[in-house]
Image 1 (spheres, rainbow, N blue to C red):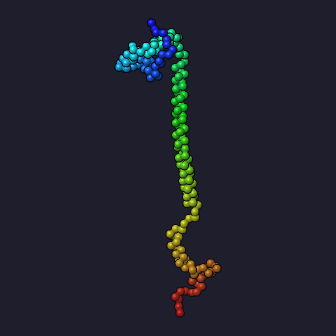
Image 2 (tube, rainbow, N blue to C red; image 1 turned 45 degrees about the vertical axis):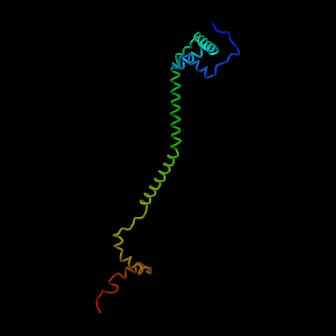
Image 3 (spheres, rainbow, N blue to C red; image 1 turned 60 degrees about the horizontal axis):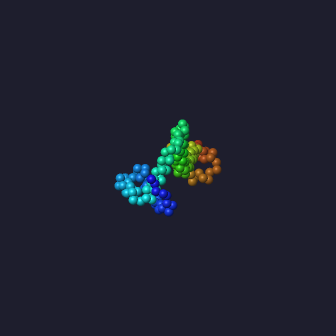
Length: 174
């Protein structure tokens, strides 16, 4: 049977205990499993630890196995969906936080451009009409002789001077 329990016996190191659990679960490769079996055959403390672990596993087999509730799958999928939605929302918020200053700057630039264009179009629509070249050519003699007309107070007097009857016929006789 089993050897009496010695309270002063040497406990396995955490690495040895982990290796022993892996051996009992069948998770070790063949070489390591053979090394553990050799230690169990030669080391009574390791063998006693192995038997204690095996007894604990055997007791677990006698415990009732819990059955998941009927809505377990539905609740789990809902939680996964909520987590996914939350992750997407956080990603959108991060993207908005990153792009927001650029969008605000672009909005201001667009507003300034629209204001400039509106001002320019308004200026073109409301400015006085430029005299055309035809108007300038028609008034060329007036422009050329402007210095002579600066001291005239009455436009009617100038018109009277332009009439041939005032001085008689030009080149008419002496």
